[in-house]
Image 1 (spheres, helix red, strand yellow):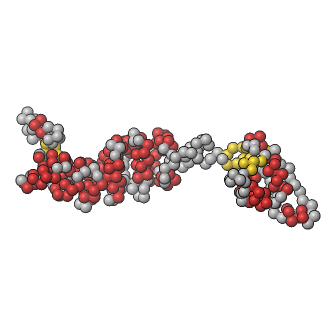
Image 2 (image 1 turned 180 degrees about the vertical axis):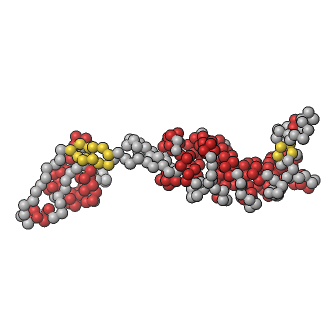
Image 3 (image 1 turned 180 degrees about the horizontal axis):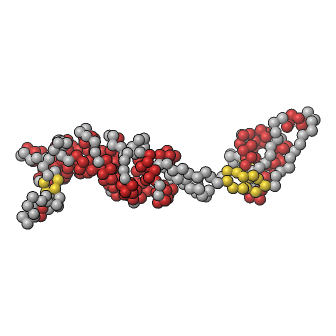
Length: 324
């Protein structure tokens, strides 16, 4: 009991003294932290294990003391490694356990670590969860009830923790595509992913100012989330902003009405007008196309200079559909 207590407290001198005295680090004993006297009450039914028992190896794993755990020497033949995997608190402890074996009950281990990463709000727990997958643990099978429990845990996390956990689950082959799709299928998960920025807002007022986590597109693909194509809306001439701002530099920035821009591109070559406005010819053509302003076809100015008859169209009264 003293050895288990010193292991949980991180007292290396106490651990060394108990080991020197012959204490067994693998023995399951009542916890001093929760009252060994109560656990050893004479009134307890004979043969029934006290309500809370653990070993020194278990306590070192739970406390995240890899230095002490290495000294105690975890052994798959003497320790319950499934328990140790569930309570391993740090990445170095997980590395020590992985040298012996990987967990068999992967879902139980992931549930426990996800719960701690969600509610403890500590980067140490998040790194421990990450290391689980880095040493070879893979979440490939799970029931809908198990996925539902994990989904509820994710939804209770803070926004920053939620973002990190979602990106972690979407990494490489850590989780099967079926499990990720099942995790993301509910309206509550979609709403949360939209809130933190994985799903871009369709509101034009906030679309470009909204924070987007890194790897957002990859995350959506991994979770099987297909976004609707942006709707197209009709833009009439009356809806065209007046004036239209052309040019990016303040020195060459020019504001024109739609009609004035039409007159310019039909009085001079597009390249000349673009140079005057401080944009490229391709950029000016895109502006005209967006505003439904026809531009002279190829060879128009050569024919005009040669005295040939050319036709100048009228400015359309309304613009066709354009993408947002």
